[in-house]
Amino acid sequence: VTTHAALAGTVKRADRWSADEALEELYAAHWRQLVRLAVLLVRDVGTAEEVVQDAFVAMHGRWGRLRDNDRALAYLRQAVVNRSRSVLRHQVVVDRHLRATAARPPETAPDADTGALAAARRGAVLDALAQLPDRQREVLVLRHYLDLSEAEIADALGIARGSVKSHASRGSAALRELLGDLWRDES
Amino acid sequence: MTDHELRHLRDLLTDAVADVEPAHALDEIRARTTTTKRHWPYAAGGAMLAVAASVAAFAMLGNDTTPRATDPGTTTSPSASATEPPTAPPTGTPSASPVRPPSAVVAVYYVGDTPDGPRLYREFRSAISDDLLTEAVSAAVGRAPDDRPLAPLDPDYRSAWPSMTAAAARTVPDGDDVIIEINLSGDPEGSLHDRGSLSEAEASLAIEQLIYTAQAAIGERAPVQFLLYGERTDQVLGLPTSEPLANGPVLDTLALVSLTSPSEGMLVDNDEPLVVEGVGNSFEGNIVTRVQRWEGTYVVDQLPTIAGWGEDKLFPFEVTFDLTGVPPGDYVVVSSTDDPSGEGRFHSDSRRITVVD
Image (cartoon, rainbow over all chains, first blue to last red; front, side, top):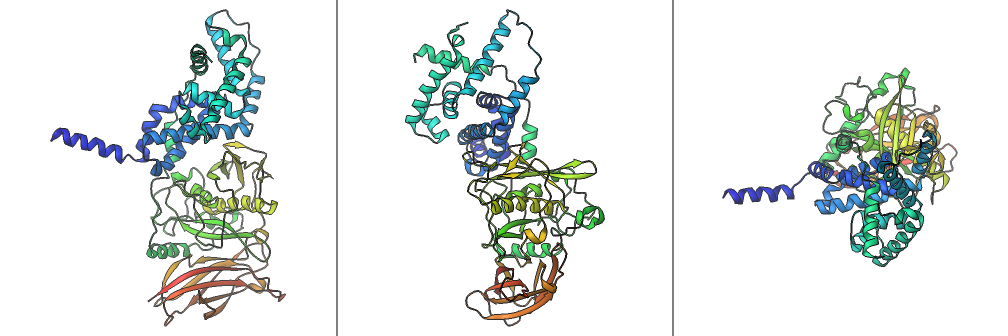
């Protein structure tokens, strides 16, 4: 009886999760990864945080229709990609990044330690991603950072699976080109 | 690409953001979601009656153009009922206001047609959230607090905003005054920066919709700063928005008559007098209201009232109909301004009601 009751309790809870509970759970599990996803898309961390916050707020408002963690997570990813794209179109991020770069004091000669090299490579990867067309960047990041399947990416972006394939191959070729030596560097 | 190259690509991407540790944001997200729990409370006509009753208490607010400093009365939030103390300050976060009576209402400005082209009409609707300012501007762009599409109650009205627009608003202190910040977002495929397929007049009315609605929600004519995706923007819908905006002149922006009560679809008992309230500005103050059958042209009664005229504002009017003996059925209440030119250029607003025994 105890087992049965406990089990029934669990099922009931999952069924009747409120929007607030879902928010908390999904935040705990995915906030960091989604912000990182958004950083790959928009580059600027502050903007990425805003984008993901907006996505969580929208998810909460839509919980009545999602009612399911997996669908909510899919919705969150989609919202992050869409909002990132909007933000980029409005050039806000680009301007902010340019301002930030311009304001930064001239860098001292980097130490020959791995930290500086790693930081340089990270910056170069983000810069290269920023130069890709929107779709190629989105597909690359969903495929290779989030590890989504072609079908999941097609759903998230509202495009055909064939397009996912072609964006992925063009995107990775372009990225390789842009990264040059860094691509081959196997440190 | 080889498997090796794929792994390398994965490592590069993962490593590129490995040092990103986002700030904690759950509290902030929670603060923004405290409004989206309940559902629209009215499914039955009885609730509509209640809304109309609480609307009556502040029928004048939302159209008052008097600067707030000289008229403390306007600081009463029109979104709360008459039982809320009129001293409640409009500053601070809207969600911080004290206990609210159950049937709060907000005034939402929508676009409707007049002989002078499209203008704004005011519609009162019941509100469910703790953030009435955001709920009001959301309604104006066509969204309910739960993100669903939300049409005006009156089918003659519409929102001028593109269909996937979302809006949130808050007040921010500006010295001793307050500024309303309205943050817009929308369809990623479209752009709210340019006016797209909207005409310039429609774009301008869309902006005025939000300015008037937000001002009514806080009960004062505060300037409005528009943001797009959380950032200041040089323009929204092609109109300059770098600076906070004041509302357009009332007599050039609003329809010259707008009904407050009855609300669209309201049930009216024919044993009770029907009180029609609204605001208007008409030649010599004349506004004529009639009640007629929905189908056909049979007029139950037609009564004149005097509202004000001349100043750049709408004046309240009220007229009472005796419905004794009026058979149950659908009726329409129409209030119209006077047109001394005889060219039929009068403004009017109408509501469909159902009379019951």
